[in-house]
Length: 407
Image (cartoon, rainbow, N blue to C red; front, side, top):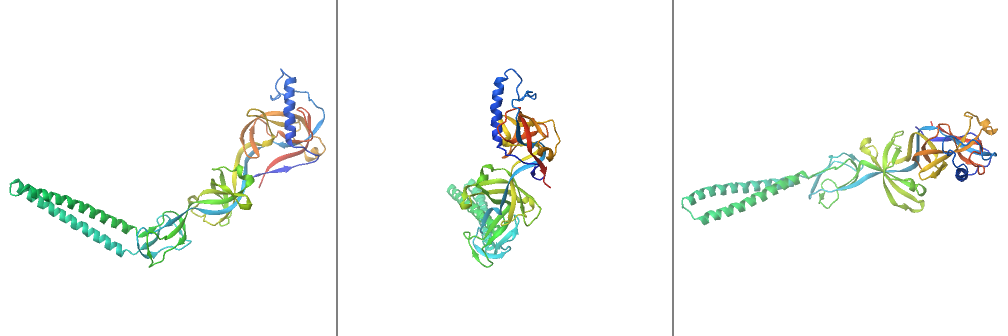
C-alpha cells in the first residue's frame, strides 16, 4: 500500500500549538480530581455531565481511522558497492599459459581465471614419483635381505651385530621412503594449483597478468569484487541520524531495472560525518544471490529506509499523547453527536462537542505516529486549539485532517 497523505477540509482562525491544550487538560484534570473526590474518574467511559466552562473553543481535529498499511521512511540516494574486494595470486612461481577473463567480466564461484604452463610442474611431479618408487624398492630389497640374515643368525651362521646393523639401515630407509612420498604428494598438489579459480560470485575489477608473463606468489594476478552480497552505500543527513538503527529494512530501486524493488537491511553506520555536507555514510546489505547477481558495483540507486511500518493500526500523532501516569497515556478528543458533516458545516461553525481526555493503550511507536488501542473509529482527536480550554468545555471544529491512500 502507498504512503498516506493528509487531506485538509477547511482552515480558519488562529490556532495555538496542541501542547497548550494538553497542559491545560492535565492541570484541569488534577483540579477536578480533588474537587470531585469520591465520584467516578474522568478516565472512565462515563463523562461528568456538567461542563466547567461555557465558552466555545476553536479546535483542529484529526479523524481516527484504521490504516491498512502505513510506513514512516527516510528517502535515500547512493550507489551499489561490493561486499568485499578479494586479491588473488598464483601460489607457485611459473609462466602464464592462458588468461580466461577480462576486466569487467562477471564470474561464478569455481570459474577458472588463468593457468600456468604445466610442463615444468609435471617434470617435478614425475621426478618426485620416480624417487619415491626407487626408495620404496630399495626398502623392500633390504627387508628381504633381513629375513635371510635373520634365519642365518638363528642358525648361528652370522653375528648378532650384523643383524643389528641391517635393522638400523632399514629404519633409515623407511624414513627416506616416507619423505619421498610426501615430496611426491606435494608436487601433485602444486600441479593442481597451476590453475587459478574464482573463490566467489564476483566481477573482475583488475587483471594484472598476461599470457607468457613470469609470475611469483608475491605478484597480484586479479582483484575480484564480491557480489553474492552487495552494499547500497548512501548518505544520511545529520537530522535523521537518531532515527537509524542496525537491522532496519530498506527498499531500493536502480535505473537498470525500472519498477523492480530490491530489499536489504541496515548493516553498518560509519562513525563520522562527511565534510561540509554533514552526512553520515550508511551501508545497507542486500542478498544479491536472491536477485541473480543483477546488482553490480557502481549502479546508482534510489530508495527508502523504513523507520516504522504499521498494518491495520489506529494511528495518532505522537505529540497528541498526554502522559497521565508512569507508562499511562491519554488523548484529548472532541465528543460530538454529529458523525457526518461537510466543509460547509465546519465553515459555519456547526460542528461542536465536549472536550474530553480519554485513556488509551499505546501499542507501538514510530518517529511521528503511535499505534493505539482504546478509541473507536472516527473519534475526533484534538491536535490544536485557540486559547487554553478546560476539560468539558465546548469545542468548535475549524479544521479536520484525514488520511487517504495514495494511488
